[in-house]
Length: 228
Image 1 (tube, rainbow, N blue to C red):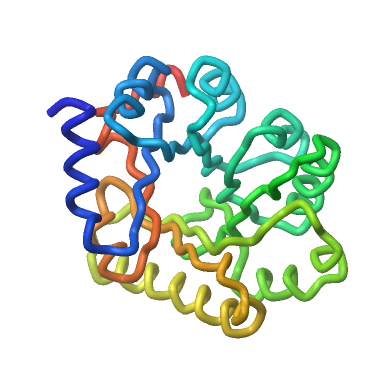
Image 2: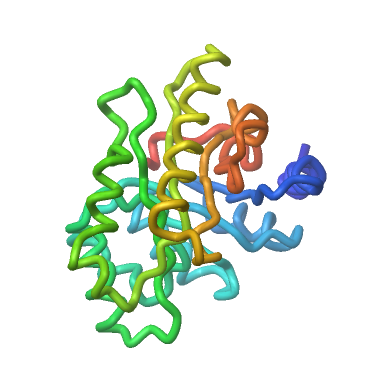
Protein backbone atom coordinates (compact mmCIF):
# COMPACT_ATOMS: atom_id res chain seq x y z
CA UNK A 1 0.00 0.00 0.00
CA UNK A 2 1.12 3.55 -0.68
CA UNK A 3 1.56 6.19 2.00
CA UNK A 4 -1.66 7.81 0.75
CA UNK A 5 -3.49 4.49 1.06
CA UNK A 6 -2.17 4.03 4.58
CA UNK A 7 -3.33 7.51 5.61
CA UNK A 8 -6.77 6.84 4.14
CA UNK A 9 -6.91 3.49 5.95
CA UNK A 10 -6.27 5.06 9.35
CA UNK A 11 -8.63 7.94 8.62
CA UNK A 12 -11.33 5.37 7.92
CA UNK A 13 -10.54 3.29 11.01
CA UNK A 14 -10.63 6.33 13.30
CA UNK A 15 -13.59 8.07 11.68
CA UNK A 16 -16.11 6.97 14.30
CA UNK A 17 -13.80 7.41 17.28
CA UNK A 18 -12.56 10.50 19.17
CA UNK A 19 -9.02 9.46 18.25
CA UNK A 20 -6.62 11.31 15.92
CA UNK A 21 -3.58 10.03 14.06
CA UNK A 22 -0.06 11.36 14.60
CA UNK A 23 2.00 10.22 11.61
CA UNK A 24 5.47 9.58 13.00
CA UNK A 25 8.09 10.28 10.34
CA UNK A 26 11.18 9.35 12.37
CA UNK A 27 14.13 8.52 10.03
CA UNK A 28 11.97 8.99 6.92
CA UNK A 29 12.85 11.77 4.46
CA UNK A 30 10.82 14.92 3.97
CA UNK A 31 9.70 13.65 0.55
CA UNK A 32 7.71 10.86 2.20
CA UNK A 33 6.20 13.27 4.71
CA UNK A 34 5.10 15.37 1.74
CA UNK A 35 3.29 12.33 0.31
CA UNK A 36 1.27 12.04 3.52
CA UNK A 37 0.73 15.81 3.48
CA UNK A 38 -0.54 15.65 -0.11
CA UNK A 39 -2.99 12.95 1.03
CA UNK A 40 -4.49 15.56 3.36
CA UNK A 41 -2.69 14.77 6.61
CA UNK A 42 -1.44 17.65 8.77
CA UNK A 43 -0.43 16.11 12.11
CA UNK A 44 3.10 14.71 12.26
CA UNK A 45 5.41 13.55 15.03
CA UNK A 46 9.19 13.41 15.35
CA UNK A 47 11.43 11.87 18.01
CA UNK A 48 14.57 13.93 17.59
CA UNK A 49 14.94 17.70 17.64
CA UNK A 50 17.45 18.00 14.78
CA UNK A 51 15.38 15.86 12.45
CA UNK A 52 12.31 17.89 13.31
CA UNK A 53 14.09 21.19 12.66
CA UNK A 54 15.39 19.96 9.31
CA UNK A 55 11.96 18.79 8.14
CA UNK A 56 10.24 21.94 9.37
CA UNK A 57 12.49 23.95 7.06
CA UNK A 58 11.62 21.82 4.04
CA UNK A 59 7.89 21.28 4.46
CA UNK A 60 4.73 23.44 4.46
CA UNK A 61 4.26 25.42 7.64
CA UNK A 62 0.64 24.51 8.21
CA UNK A 63 1.82 21.16 9.58
CA UNK A 64 1.16 20.69 13.30
CA UNK A 65 4.42 19.20 14.55
CA UNK A 66 4.50 17.09 17.72
CA UNK A 67 7.75 16.28 19.49
CA UNK A 68 7.20 12.79 20.92
CA UNK A 69 10.74 11.76 21.89
CA UNK A 70 12.72 12.61 25.00
CA UNK A 71 13.55 16.32 25.06
CA UNK A 72 16.61 17.77 26.76
CA UNK A 73 16.22 21.24 28.20
CA UNK A 74 19.13 22.59 26.16
CA UNK A 75 17.34 21.72 22.90
CA UNK A 76 14.00 23.39 23.62
CA UNK A 77 15.25 26.63 22.06
CA UNK A 78 15.51 25.03 18.61
CA UNK A 79 11.80 24.17 18.36
CA UNK A 80 10.02 26.63 20.67
CA UNK A 81 9.26 29.11 17.89
CA UNK A 82 7.19 26.73 15.76
CA UNK A 83 6.30 23.55 17.67
CA UNK A 84 2.60 22.81 18.12
CA UNK A 85 2.82 20.19 20.87
CA UNK A 86 5.51 18.65 23.06
CA UNK A 87 4.12 15.29 24.15
CA UNK A 88 7.14 14.22 26.20
CA UNK A 89 7.19 16.61 29.17
CA UNK A 90 8.65 14.49 31.96
CA UNK A 91 9.77 17.07 34.55
CA UNK A 92 8.99 20.48 35.98
CA UNK A 93 12.48 21.60 34.94
CA UNK A 94 11.65 20.90 31.30
CA UNK A 95 8.29 22.65 31.53
CA UNK A 96 9.96 25.74 33.01
CA UNK A 97 12.36 25.84 30.06
CA UNK A 98 9.57 25.42 27.51
CA UNK A 99 7.63 28.29 29.07
CA UNK A 100 10.76 30.49 29.13
CA UNK A 101 11.62 29.85 25.49
CA UNK A 102 8.04 30.38 24.33
CA UNK A 103 8.04 33.74 26.09
CA UNK A 104 11.35 34.67 24.50
CA UNK A 105 9.88 34.07 21.04
CA UNK A 106 6.82 36.11 21.94
CA UNK A 107 4.45 33.38 20.88
CA UNK A 108 0.86 34.51 20.48
CA UNK A 109 -0.28 30.93 21.08
CA UNK A 110 1.06 28.86 23.96
CA UNK A 111 2.98 25.64 23.38
CA UNK A 112 0.72 22.65 23.93
CA UNK A 113 2.32 20.22 26.37
CA UNK A 114 1.47 16.71 27.45
CA UNK A 115 2.73 15.07 30.62
CA UNK A 116 4.56 11.84 29.86
CA UNK A 117 3.53 9.20 32.37
CA UNK A 118 5.62 6.08 32.94
CA UNK A 119 3.46 2.99 32.37
CA UNK A 120 5.90 0.43 30.95
CA UNK A 121 8.06 -2.15 32.71
CA UNK A 122 11.11 -0.87 30.87
CA UNK A 123 13.78 1.33 32.44
CA UNK A 124 14.70 2.73 29.02
CA UNK A 125 11.44 4.64 28.74
CA UNK A 126 11.05 8.10 30.27
CA UNK A 127 8.12 9.53 32.19
CA UNK A 128 6.76 10.63 35.53
CA UNK A 129 4.56 8.76 37.93
CA UNK A 130 1.04 10.08 38.24
CA UNK A 131 1.89 11.34 41.74
CA UNK A 132 4.84 13.27 40.32
CA UNK A 133 2.55 14.81 37.70
CA UNK A 134 0.20 15.90 40.47
CA UNK A 135 3.09 17.51 42.35
CA UNK A 136 4.11 19.37 39.19
CA UNK A 137 0.59 20.74 38.71
CA UNK A 138 0.46 21.83 42.35
CA UNK A 139 3.76 23.75 42.13
CA UNK A 140 3.98 27.52 42.25
CA UNK A 141 6.25 27.46 39.20
CA UNK A 142 3.61 25.79 37.06
CA UNK A 143 0.85 28.11 38.25
CA UNK A 144 2.85 31.12 37.10
CA UNK A 145 3.39 29.84 33.55
CA UNK A 146 1.63 31.77 30.79
CA UNK A 147 3.14 30.35 27.62
CA UNK A 148 2.29 26.66 27.92
CA UNK A 149 -1.01 24.79 27.81
CA UNK A 150 -1.32 21.34 29.37
CA UNK A 151 -3.52 19.33 27.02
CA UNK A 152 -3.28 15.79 28.39
CA UNK A 153 -1.05 12.81 29.08
CA UNK A 154 1.17 10.57 26.97
CA UNK A 155 2.48 7.09 27.66
CA UNK A 156 4.56 4.41 25.95
CA UNK A 157 3.52 0.86 26.72
CA UNK A 158 5.83 -2.09 27.18
CA UNK A 159 7.12 -3.61 23.94
CA UNK A 160 5.18 -6.86 24.20
CA UNK A 161 2.55 -8.95 22.43
CA UNK A 162 0.78 -9.63 25.74
CA UNK A 163 -2.60 -7.99 25.17
CA UNK A 164 -3.62 -8.20 28.81
CA UNK A 165 -0.48 -6.38 29.90
CA UNK A 166 -0.96 -3.71 27.24
CA UNK A 167 -4.56 -3.16 28.29
CA UNK A 168 -3.48 -2.85 31.92
CA UNK A 169 -0.90 -0.21 31.04
CA UNK A 170 -3.29 1.72 28.81
CA UNK A 171 -5.90 1.55 31.56
CA UNK A 172 -3.35 2.91 34.03
CA UNK A 173 -2.69 5.90 31.79
CA UNK A 174 -6.40 6.54 31.33
CA UNK A 175 -6.89 6.38 35.11
CA UNK A 176 -4.10 8.92 35.60
CA UNK A 177 -5.71 11.20 33.02
CA UNK A 178 -9.04 10.97 34.84
CA UNK A 179 -7.38 11.68 38.17
CA UNK A 180 -5.62 14.78 36.85
CA UNK A 181 -8.74 15.94 35.03
CA UNK A 182 -10.90 15.69 38.14
CA UNK A 183 -8.32 17.34 40.38
CA UNK A 184 -6.89 20.12 38.22
CA UNK A 185 -8.76 20.51 34.92
CA UNK A 186 -12.43 19.84 35.56
CA UNK A 187 -13.43 23.21 34.11
CA UNK A 188 -10.69 23.24 31.46
CA UNK A 189 -11.65 21.79 28.07
CA UNK A 190 -8.05 22.01 26.83
CA UNK A 191 -7.08 19.01 28.96
CA UNK A 192 -8.56 16.26 26.79
CA UNK A 193 -5.81 14.14 25.22
CA UNK A 194 -4.62 10.63 26.03
CA UNK A 195 -1.79 9.86 23.64
CA UNK A 196 -1.18 6.11 23.63
CA UNK A 197 -0.86 3.39 21.05
CA UNK A 198 1.57 2.81 18.19
CA UNK A 199 1.69 0.69 15.03
CA UNK A 200 1.63 -2.64 16.86
CA UNK A 201 -0.94 -1.86 19.56
CA UNK A 202 -3.05 1.07 18.38
CA UNK A 203 -6.32 -0.90 18.17
CA UNK A 204 -6.06 -1.91 21.83
CA UNK A 205 -5.18 1.68 22.75
CA UNK A 206 -8.26 3.05 21.00
CA UNK A 207 -10.43 0.50 22.78
CA UNK A 208 -8.91 1.66 26.08
CA UNK A 209 -9.63 5.33 25.48
CA UNK A 210 -6.79 6.77 23.40
CA UNK A 211 -7.51 10.10 21.72
CA UNK A 212 -4.23 10.15 19.80
CA UNK A 213 -2.23 7.27 18.31
CA UNK A 214 1.38 7.60 17.15
CA UNK A 215 1.94 5.50 14.03
CA UNK A 216 5.19 5.37 12.06
CA UNK A 217 5.94 2.12 10.23
CA UNK A 218 2.22 1.52 9.70
CA UNK A 219 2.26 4.57 7.42
CA UNK A 220 5.79 5.04 6.12
CA UNK A 221 7.10 1.47 6.21
CA UNK A 222 10.10 0.09 8.07
CA UNK A 223 12.44 2.66 9.58
CA UNK A 224 16.05 3.08 8.54
CA UNK A 225 17.73 3.02 11.94
CA UNK A 226 21.09 3.94 10.41
CA UNK A 227 19.61 7.45 10.27
CA UNK A 228 18.32 7.51 13.84
